[in-house]
Image 1 (cartoon, rainbow, N blue to C red):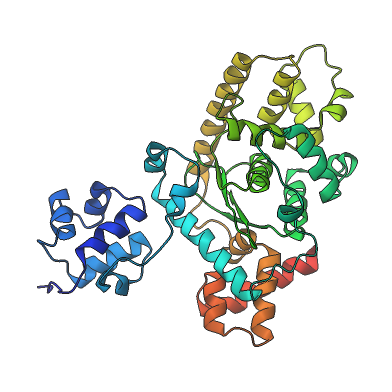
Image 2 (cartoon, rainbow, N blue to C red):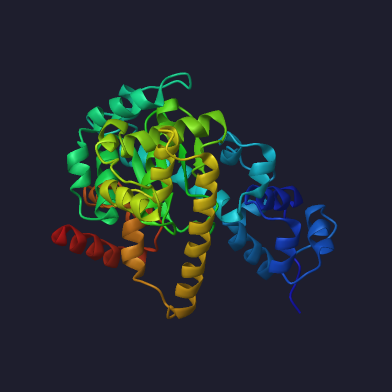
Length: 386
């Protein structure tokens, strides 16, 4: 019979669960127990076996040792700084809470790897500032000049995948690191965390590429405003800051002056919208947003069309999932896409310069030591074929 262990701090049990976004019901299900058992453990009236503690520690993404601390560690509750209502925070999936902590850890890694100094010569978050009463249109124009990417260069990219890679590289060159991950929650497209030296953007890699492109610039707007942000949908009737960031992203990706030269369709049906979206390598809702602003379409039309497209997308996604074979793609290719070449090259270079140990390198890249050589090989192969 498994022995129950002493010394677990019940306050930390509750703290770890809540910080990870899990309900009592979810914790109980993990242990195949009734919810009363979790309440008893978190009040100190019942004990856990070591195996049960390991299971909860793994679910909450916390080291086992932390549950024996006298007090919860001092840790910023990042979710509370996302400019969300408390009810919205409560609805965030646990996976998002974990990724927010991961993003914060990445900022600490960047500080450590760079010895507290951002290596980018030009830093957009330092040189370009915005206020909510500014014009998002003018900010978009200013930002495009700063990034030095013309509309002709953008429209010349072959597909959205190439566009996203180029935009990511361009923004990272200006001091903002961009990471990806599978959010496992399609209600969240991405988020950003401000920082005096290393602001970061996270994109939901499970979302369509064109959606990730819009999210990238929506979050960039948040950083230029100096505000943490989280992207849920492209809603032209949302809260003021979200409306500002949507308008900025839409104007940046589809400049109104340039769009005017393409508005030659007799009717702006789905085919016309698709053609416009393909020119700029953006999603169809972005084009709808621009057409609303020009008075060509109404918000009601936007809702009707996006609802239909969402239904088709979800049906296609579900069918694709049913037909996919188990196993998925390469782990190393996935991690390289998530971390990005710039961050990986930085981490490996510091290791070879003797500025971090292999164990520290493993922590910075969030992979096991035994997987580092394969991950590096994957990075080198991608560099050769680029």
